[in-house]
Length: 194
Image (cartoon, rainbow, N blue to C red; front, side):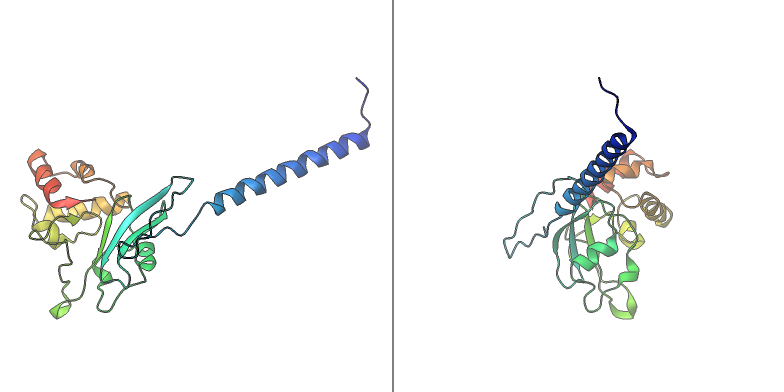
């Protein structure tokens, strides 16, 4: 094999570096072009677009927001991102009643309560025992206390655990909270959803 001169080695090195830079730029561009508008509106009939990275979360935003619905957001998004995606807080929204900094989990329902008389949050649709399960991702201490076997101390522990975890993907994660035994877990499964 013939020996390469220094100038030839320099040229080959420059070509290799250029190819690496072009390849890196192409990979980055491919990752950002995979993001698409993928909100879901039952009334509008628009469906979900599949994200090629598979790292998105799908959440249902309801209550006091301008555009309630089901939305796809990037993994790692926070409750505040979901509220903004749903058009922002609506008239009378009580944002201080939910943890806007909590991380979203796939399948989570975000319920933004409305202010009631005296500034107390009104129960949103799906947030009372008569209407169905409440979201563990947005449940207040008062809503948790309505569940059999949950008192104020345990309700506060659940909220703190949820906040430490950055949200919960499953109700079953609550078995890690001290004071919650098998019977309480059954009550939680019946009354809560992710």
